[in-house]
Every structure is written in structure tokens, then in C-alpha cells.
Image (cartoon, rainbow over all chains, first blue to last red; front, side):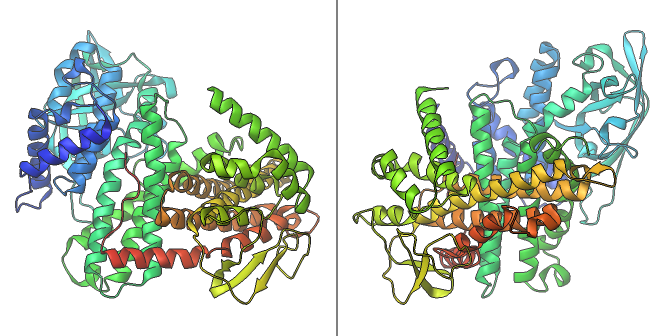
Length: 362
Length: 262
């Protein structure tokens, strides 16, 4: 199906079906709204395009998913954060889970029936993810997992977790599992963050028993899984986040009194540059390219544009962030994390220097 | 590689070889012999980015911007036309070797008192590619210096502060090239020129710093690219001016145009 035709059909459908969020602006409300939107889109088929038939999809190129994300987020029907988990975790299941498990589980994620989370970072393993220490040890056909994860987004709402564990030393000793979050021994504790939304959690794993058939890939495939996941995060996911940032910029333009043209223009140029770059990335992915370290450029452009946008909002809406309880405050504060999550700005520049500029080891 | 890709690679090879050999007026003539004016007429979408980016990468120059602007205006090419410069000034980029007082002493660019409005989108896009090529030339110089130069017993390329400056330079260039490749209308070309100007100015700052003392000498090639960056950025509107214009356009429309879609 041609992208333009698909977009036209989707827009017409969204015009006819009112999915406007209700008055609940809590994180719980956002999650419920996302689930409602995904269910409606899944039942109508839209949410199934761009996904393989084997996992409940209707086929077609992944770029169709980016179109759905752009329309949903661009119309403020759902928040991009929780939505992005679909784009990150469904491809991981498709690539690494046993076929039957992927076929059983992925439709639950696409249809909004379940939310999933990603258990990667640990208190001692942030930028240095490969040093993670949560241990999985064989116990008959099962594995027993002990350790602690942190920064696990939406864990308190999640039914499943893609969990990285250590099964032996080194990069090749990391093994991934697909874990039910209601397993005995799992405790979730949301973190209080500076922007007031408790989306990040600590997850404690105390002798959690995971069946061997829930392993993703083979023992030692975990690092490769984590690296393969990044390009997903930086393609379709980014496109919906960009759509979101454009809506915020539009709102800034509407609300600012006599805004400075240079400030507006600079924020717009950063967004436009990001959008052009990301579009090229979506098309490379659609043409079958394997995305790699060059997506670190997309990541730096996104984080920079996002912080630039909210710095500009604070400049052009003086007092709003400091004096009023508006979304601008929450969003401004959240934007401070853009150069930290998903690989810090410094890690991205290290990757660019090493892999793209071939400057040798640092 | 498709046949088109092959043809393009061969063309690029021929143009680069010519630019490595000659610059200025002789290059202007050599490019006419290579079919520059025909290409501009028949396939400007391929010819302009290819030729202008190579001007930047090789450090050569020729007054081809006249042709791009005249072609877009539907006027005869091969001549000159007054071009707007930053600050409301006008200049003429001559087709001879009559050098003037321009910061980039190789370029025969002169102030003139008046000019008439001309369509600028195509010219801005062409200059954007030139600036992107110039930025890549500076990055290449700084990169090879960082890998050769040893201090404290280590290649300076091993220091994170140096690596991050070079990484930041590449981010700017890649972003600008994405806007150039997507530039189709007036605003898109304006934004692409602004992005390319910014990227080249960023490259000039970071690469000069990475090159240290040698990059400040006239013996090293960097200063030629720095001078060219400053002049080309200001030609047909500086990045600062273009950004302000883009902001005014957004304010007037009341929302941000989504210039590219999937």
C-alpha cells in the first residue's frame, strides 16, 4: 500500500472516530488512553500494518507504523513515551523470541491489551551497560534471576519485561529473557523524578524463576539484542517523537506574545533538521538498510532540538515554567533528561568519533 | 550500483579531477567544456549538488552561482548578476581574475551599490552544498591532524575533548546535508542554507581548535576554508538572517510548516 494512500485513509478514519483523551492527565490516565487508542486502531487494522503476519500484523513496510505514530501523537491522542515501547519491544520479540512466543505475545502489545517494559539499566550499569550484574543461574529447565534494575519505564503498568541478565562474564555473557511481571519475587518501586511524573521504576528481582523457553535468543545473545534494539528506537519511535515536538512548537507559537523571530527560527531550524534527517533514516530502513552507529547522529539531533525547543519556550513564555502549573513546566523539566536517557550525549559522541570518524580507541 | 549511480560517480570523478587541477577563471572555462551549463539546464537536481559540494571539498572556486541564479530567473547563463549579501549589501561575483578586498582573497567578489531582486532558492541550495563540502574539507584536515599529532605520548585524537568537537562537527554536517537533500521549496532552501552555514561555522570553530597552532598559520590550508565559509555564509543571506526570516514566516503562519513527510 502506498504511504500517501495509507495516510489519507488513516486520517479519514481518525476524523470519523473520536479518540480524544479524557480529563485524566495522570500517568495512569495516559497509559489507559494509550491502551484505548491502540485497541481501537488494532481492531480497525491500522495498528497491524507494518508488522509481520506471523505476529498478528497485516504486513507492509515499517514506514506505515511511523505514519500511524505521527498521526496519533501529532493529534495529541497519546503520549509518545509509552507508545514508543511498542516500537522498541515488538521488533525485539519478533527477532529474538521463539516463533510461537512472539505470535502469542506481540498481538497483546499491539492491541493495547498489555504494556511492556525494558529491564536494562542497573544502579551500577548506566552508560556502561555491559557491566550489568543481575544474575541468571540455571535451575533445571528454568532460570533463577537475582538483582536490581533501575530507570525501567512504566514497569508499574507492565505485564512483561524484556530483561537483560548476566549468565557469564563479559559482553558475551549477557542473556535476555521475556519475564512475566507478576512472577513471584518481583518488586516494583516507582522513582520520584524532578518533573513529577513517576514513569521510571526500580525493579527488584529476588529469586525470580523464569522458564527456559522464555529466553530471547540463545545464552549470550543479550548484548546483540540490546544493540539491535537501538535502531528501532531511533527510527519509527523518533518519527512520532518529532511529530510530538512539532505540536509543542505550534503551541509555543500560538501562546507566545510578540516572540523574537530569531529565537523562533532557531528552534524551528533544529526541528526541521531533525525531521529531514529522521525522514532519510525511515527511508533507509524501508529500503532494507541495516541501521547502525549512524543513528547516533539522529539521537544527538533529537536531544539537542528537544532541549532547544523547551529552552526557547521558557524564553518566549516568561514566567510560565516558574510561576504556573502548566504542562510547560513538566515538559521543560522532562526535556533535561533528553541528553541522558537512551545513551547519554557523551556516549553518542564517543560512538560517532569511534565508529563514524574512525578516530581509533579513546 | 545502478547505471545512474555509475554515471554519477564517473561524472564526480571527472569534475573532482578538474577542480584539483585548476581553480577560478580557468575552472569556470573547464567546467563549461565538461558540460556544466547543459547539466544545469537538463538535470539541475543532480548537477548542482554534485558540482557545488565538490567545490567545497576540493577548495577550488568558480563563479557558478551566477549561472544557478540566472537559470532560476529564466535568464541567459554564463554572465553575472548582482547578488544580495548580508546586511543588505550587494555584490558581483566576477567571471574573471579581478580580485578585490574580500576576506577570501581568492574570490573575485566586489561590492556594488545596487541590485535587483532575483529568485534565491536555487542559489541558496547550491551555496548550502558548497558550505557542506567546505565543512567536510575542514573536518578531514582536523581529523588527519588529530590522528598524526602526538602530545603527552598519545595521539590527540585519543582525547575525549578533541573527539567530541569532531563528532559535533559531523553531526552538524550530516544534519545540514539532510536538509539540503530535502530542500524543494523557497522555505526549504532557506532553511537548508541556514543549516549549512551554521554547520560550516561550527566546523570552522571546532576544526581550528583541534588543529591548534598549525591551523592558525597561512602554511596550513585550513584558513582558506575558514575564509570561504565566512564569505559563503553571508552570501544570499547569512545563517543568522535566514533563521530570523524563518522565524518570521512561522510567526506569520501561526504554526510550523512540516516541509517533509514520509
